[in-house]
Amino acid sequence: MAIQHRSNNDINSPLVDLEMREIEEKIQIDGADKTWWDFRPLFRNRADRYRAYMVILIGVFGQLSGNGLITYFLPILLKNAGITSQDRQLTLNFVNSVTSYIGALTGSAIIDRYGRRKILLLSTSTMIVILATVTGLLSSFGSAARANAGITMIYLFMVVFSFGWTPMQALYPAEVLSYQARAKGLAFLGIVSQVATLINTFGLPVALQKIGWKVYLIFLIWDVFELIVIYFFVVETKGLTLEEINEVFEDKSPRHYSDRLQRETRQRQTSGA
Image (cartoon, rainbow, N blue to C red; front, side, top):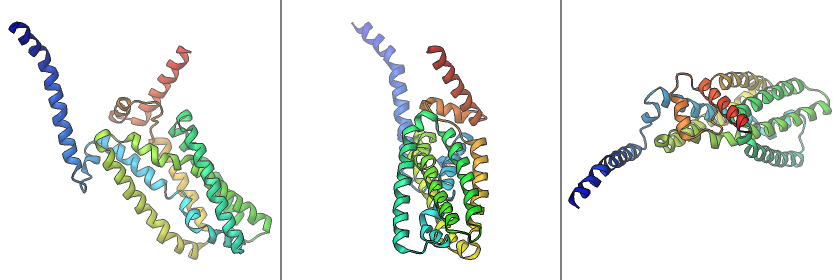
């Protein structure tokens, strides 16, 4: 009986040692996370830095794609387009809220079907086309029909932004961050977003006063830059497990590696069907 008891100890010992190491690691992680002001764990190595860059990308682009101009200063934009009636401005502001909600709801419903990267590329490309149209329509005074067309395009812009970017701001950072850095990473996202919001709050009023419709042109150029960055750097996380996401960011080229995983997943699904 004693021999059997020693045998069980021998068998269980490696398992106990493994569990103890996991507990110690968890304590170390939790202890480091209690230092609320220390964001260095987000930038410890190349993989962590890439994850942090994705968080920064979502935080900055999610605030500075032109949506802040419309969200905060829609009455001014309407006035510049020739709509001076306060009642009509309030009505159009309400319509903007409703249509943006519909766009965000639609994006949230299909994001798991089409993937994060594809929706970001599609929505940002469409936003560029819309901003180019708005710039042409509102760059000079014209007829009421021209002004109405410009306002319609502004509303369409917000629908497209809400479709592509609103769901992504809540989902994508949580997916790309590692387990031990997720809470601190989401706090970091809030800081980045608020810093970017300062530009909307304090910079846009001056820009609208000084250069008027040319603000649309600035955001048009910026959105082209966003599209390039998204294409070359944003990784696809659709359908990946936490372990596979870790593998993606540990790779030398995370974006290409994520594309390869997506292709392999599609091939398995096709062969299985």
